[in-house]
Image 1 (cartoon, rainbow, N blue to C red):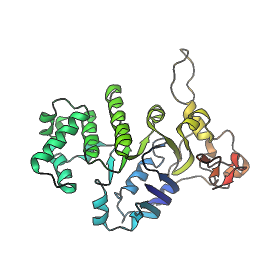
Image 2 (cartoon, rainbow, N blue to C red):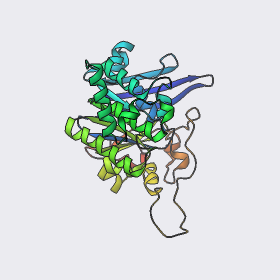
Image 3 (tube, helix red, strand yellow):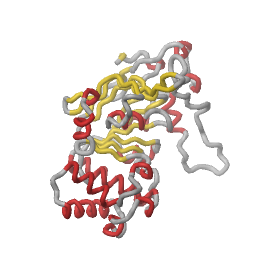
Length: 322
């Protein structure tokens, strides 16, 4: 459905290039949920914005390929990209407070989306918008339709953002931390809606999150990012039961689970490197207890473990290099 090859997304700054996304390759297949996980600042959201064509090209350096239905998206004009964005590829943004225009009602902004991508009448636009507001669990949907963004909580706006993305029933949905501001009940409802869209409509979903519990619930496959690179790829079952990369193992063991009171919580030592001060070699080696001498000098390629699972770590050099 979407194929990303050798993608680089660098930001131009006075101090040089910030390597937010650095040579990543992945494929979002038809009718699947692919989770992209990692700590804050690892490049997940920049990857999503690059695929959506929402980065300022005058201030970024983009290299590589993004293929959608055999179209090379990075080569499209802004107008051609706009025709695909929203209609064919939808996105749920991470920050709903900054995604809405404070001068217009929620209903007006939803109708503007429908006007741009459908031939519905004004009344039908309203009916569809209200229908999706109800679907996403917003009480008094008719009333909310006429309200302004400042009249809603962050969690409510997040649900409106999700409704806006789902109401066009896109072929591909990019969901950037869609459940962060939601309570457990609404979170379960949103995950169910996304899953139903994937199963019933064949929608492919790129699900970006740091919440491994959500990943276990919704994903088919998982890619783990660290400091701008993908370090492990695998099925959700294998990754949770037999993680390979030391960083993935650290993420899984750092989850908060029920245990004895007073027990020290596990954590990954050190800090994620800043994107303009990246270490040589493997970017995780300053925090890795299993590092080899070459880890400090050489960046590992992806090693093929089996058909579905790959890892970028010198500990698995016996595997076939991808």
